[in-house]
Amino acid sequence: MRRMVEGNGISPSEVCLKSFNQNFEDAINVEWVKKANCFEAIFYKNNLEHIAIFSRSGILNEYRLNIPSDYLPETIKNFVSARGEIMNTVIRNKGNMIEYEVIVRDKELKRHLINFSDIGRIIEEKKL
Image (cartoon, rainbow, N blue to C red; front, side, top):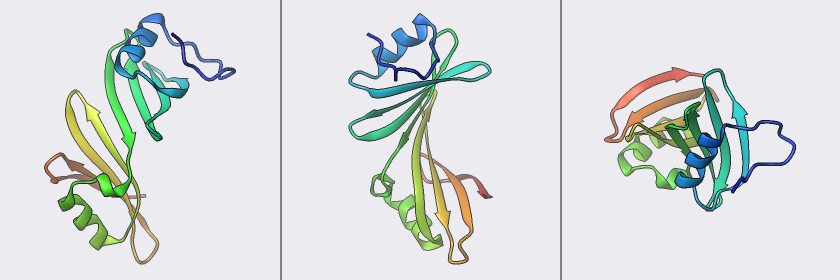
């Protein structure tokens, strides 16, 4: 079953569609984006925005989910809350490795992107 947004003009390969349907039942408002070496599916499930990245051969390489900050592990939430206002939170599953990506706005209104491992270790931090 194809669940693409009409008129977006992108048609991923059948193998990508099959993989998508196997991994993401009940997805709605699916929009496909063609990148250099992959296809991205942007969609909603359970009222949350998801992004799935597939190789051209249909392998699910990465999965991202925009989550409410309340879904962050407590240690990460406490750390970033002390740094400023949480603007955006994403959980990433890449090859069964979980990471959290948080955008924080400090008291000077500067934004910072902080990537955490699943155990709360900072992987990367940069100003936006």
